[in-house]
Length: 324
Ligand SMILES: [Zn+2]
Ligand SMILES: [Zn+2]
Image 1 (tube, rainbow, N blue to C red):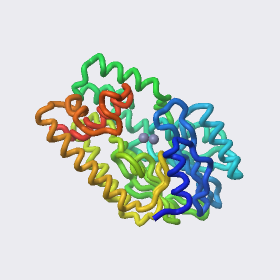
Image 2: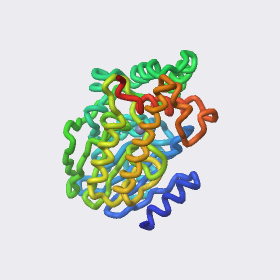
Image 3: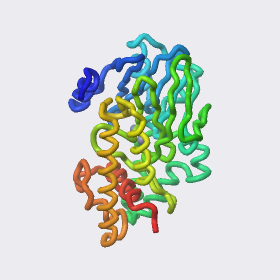
């Protein structure tokens, strides 16, 4: 199955280009924002027209080029930043919430995030992002020098603001959010992060953040606590999203796609198999640092840069959770 928009955006993605603002129908626009210097290349912010004003799903990096790209794309679809009444965050990674504060300052928009991704809660329960990363690296068996290099690189990739406070904190599995004539459902879908949330639009769209993309696999959360179970969380989220009856998935990277339920099954099978392989290897390779090079990745282990290797390593560590 294909529709005009998914075809075009998929082609642009494969050609490594950032798509121009694209109408998906039902007052929904996909707005590609380039992420300068990031291997992610771009993030797609979704703009939803409602009778109460414009609702954005995610913001981009905190960077002047992202701000000018977002504001000029909004102008291209006939809007100004002051039209934004709400920013709904899928999770607290810097490519998603970087501009949230600036948008709120410019427009008075409210910011919404799930409690488990709220910085205040997370700092209290799990430590800040860099604390968690330090703990996880210490658990992987990575040699000290390489671990220090990974940590150092992580602090340079992006501004990781850990002080933002949201106006609305989601606490339930499902929360209805009404903006004029549009009622969205915010659905807790952990795995990529602990508070990752997808947003369902009544016209059949689901905004899937970094949890469900059309290509590759899903990066697992940092798992610093012994009872953390990111794979279990993620499999639960695939079951949840697959059962929503949505017809179009709109991820934050890559491109919108159809066959949402089928993709959920496919990714669930992939991560189940990946975890079984990692656990089997862990019986002879001891820890994540020993297991990671034996797993298959988009790029061979020996060709990975320090940051890609860090992502692969923390993903492997998450596959081996919960720790016995
Ligand atoms: Zn993310
Ligand atoms: Zn992302």
